[in-house]
Length: 230
Ligand code: SAH
Ligand code: DHB
Ligand code: MG
Image (cartoon, rainbow, N blue to C red; front, top):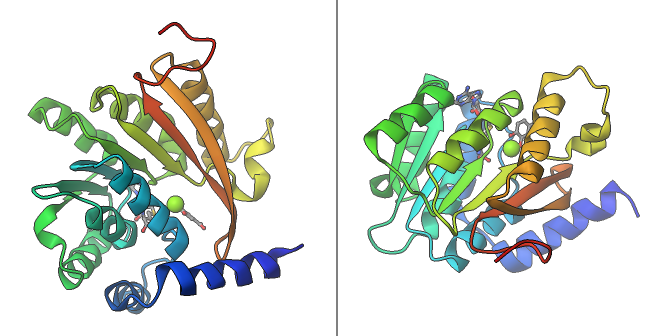
């Protein structure tokens, strides 16, 4: 079994379970045309985010790392009535392309794109009393993941689902001695999740058209690991 089989399998699920999706296709085309990197989640991964958000009946979602709004569209589609997504993006150009994509996808009314360094905007959100969010999707610079986890916990409640993208990176995360700030960030993030008594967490490795990667998935409080105190 190899990469080619994973990719074919992913295309098969795209076709059967995701299907043609003109607004998302247009979003990817606009992202490409604008010269924004094509590093968004894959269709099956985006739909996983939507399924998870729908399963918990999410009404408020925080996303850290908008890029051009591809994952944002999937998350926004899961929202119940009156729901909202707040999504954070460093780069003006990415935010601009994202806003156009969100508009075209018909979810702009439910999404607030906030431009700036995520850590600064997260502190602002806490000051504004913007939380608690039902779901947080962490997908910005990997070196920042440890700080984003701490800030996300401050914007959470028991039951909040915290999902982080790119926790495998072809297995490069395994290298304890790595000097790559992204890999170090992810390893530190996993250590923090592991040490955090308020979190019950796992990780799901993914293969497919985006290669070999994975998601960390954690729930705040409420659920307890078998050894934990209720
Ligand atoms: N969630 C998107 C992909 C995000 S890519 C999707 O799947 O569709 C990561 C994004 O994080 C990039 O757009 C990058 O500009 C942004 N980013 C990087 N560092 C950041 C920071 N410090 N604060 C906010 N956004 C940041
Ligand atoms: C890449 C992929 C991602 O999902 C991301 O958030 C950042 C970078 C990449 O493939 O380089
Ligand atoms: Mg990612």
